[in-house]
Length: 203
Image (cartoon, helix red, strand yellow):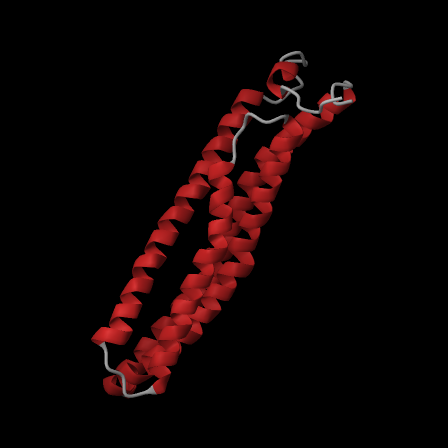
């Protein structure tokens, strides 16, 4: 027997008081996917622009006398490219995702998106920040030497402070908020599936 079920129609038969609002759940999931997609598009666009700038600046506009500058630039570019390649897998899923599938398929779809987003927003972003930190630290050695001890120290202190702030505060805060948003939507869809299963509609 086919498992493709119009869960919108079936859900209308459930107790109005006990059920979540299926239309509202779908709207919220759509808004959340759009929000996530737009953030990724903005981030990817920014990284592409910065990568192009780095390449042009490093190889055409800046003649370095130290190997650390070149290595730092390459590490930074590598971090940008790695983030773009991996995050675009999530971006494609967000564009392909739709709410017209049956409840099981749609729930699996959202769970897959949530898992990929967690990988991007935790492991990938942290790896990206570490690569960026090492790359920028190496890249700055040459100009910092020219600045002198005082201003060079100020530059590195600002860099370390910003990286620590992003790594220990900004990223965990953003990840916690995003997980809570996805968990709310998925929990409601799971409730729908559970109640449909209990009523025997998913046999």
